[in-house]
Length: 158
Image 1 (cartoon, rainbow, N blue to C red):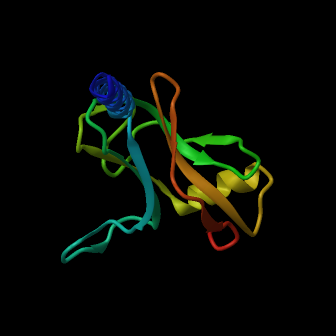
Image 2: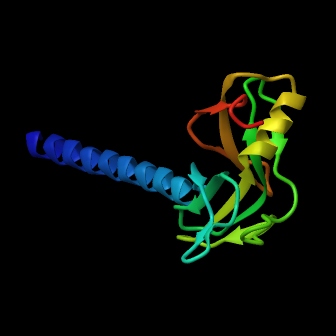
């Protein structure tokens, strides 16, 4: 009788372990199927050897697909402190890249905007001095991928 009880406990423990592993597998599959885009921002000066600087200072936002499924990006821009969105429209005039586009796993896209132009748009929105903003990319099913917030000095770029 004790052997039968021990066997039942072992079978129940194995079944429970199988259930836990199945749930973990289901969660990991869900995470893998979710679009994963890392958004970063950098400052960029476009130059050419022998010629020098050929563009004004830019803010460049980058989206990199760090997931395992293709992601269809539809727009990008800046999120303002009041949560309003300042969308970058049209192709980047230096890289000629534009949205919408599809990023395969491991691919990235850079979109830039001149600091002077961005500062002008921010002044038109009523901002001055230094503000904290975030870069974003949006996909075609309305997921928004954001960068960490960063400071932008509006008055410096007149």
